[in-house]
Amino acid sequence: APHVYVWGDLFIYYEEGNPAANIAPDVFVVFGVGTHPRRTYKVWEEGKFPDVVIEIASEWTYRQDIGAKVDVYERLGAREYFLYDPSGELLRPQLQGYRLIADRFQRLEPGPEGALRSEVLGLELRLRDGWLRLWDPVDRTWLPTPDEDRAARQQAEAQARQAEAQARQAEAQVIEERAARQWAEARAAALEAELARMRAQRETAQP
Image 1 (tube, rainbow, N blue to C red):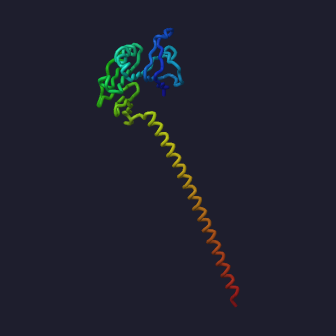
Image 2: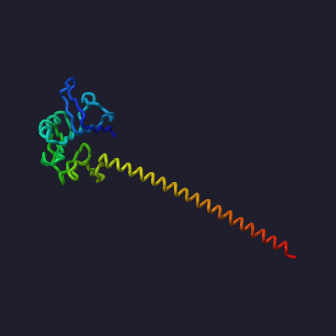
């Protein structure tokens, strides 16, 4: 599988020798490049512009998000561009998207409940309780947020510790039962030996 680099708020420089030619998307995804940390992303060194860009609209940025940035991302070759308005007051609809077709951005038509399909990611961008979330249409599950992923790992670790404790308890019980059985067998053997000794004494005492 190709390396996938996902980051945000990182300056992307797209013209070598021109530091003013830069842009810093809120989130971007690049396929086929290393996942090592970067201080900046230089297109001429990486060999490509990000495949998917997501901008989170704010009162200060949304006019650029729906205006100049559409042209910039189209010109630079972003395969998909999505815009999300957390407030629900700046963009109508709240979630919008474009896909590059023949070097031109085409506006994506939303599906049921305003969902937008990303062909590049193989996922759907949806709103869940007003928040942008990613939906896997194959597994029919939501991709976990970082908090959910962390909670799931903690739960899995707790379950693993509980299972380990139960295994140790079961092993201790087996050892205890084995010891009890061995003691019972030893006691039975001792009783049998005592009975045999008493029978022998009676036989010897008889005239």
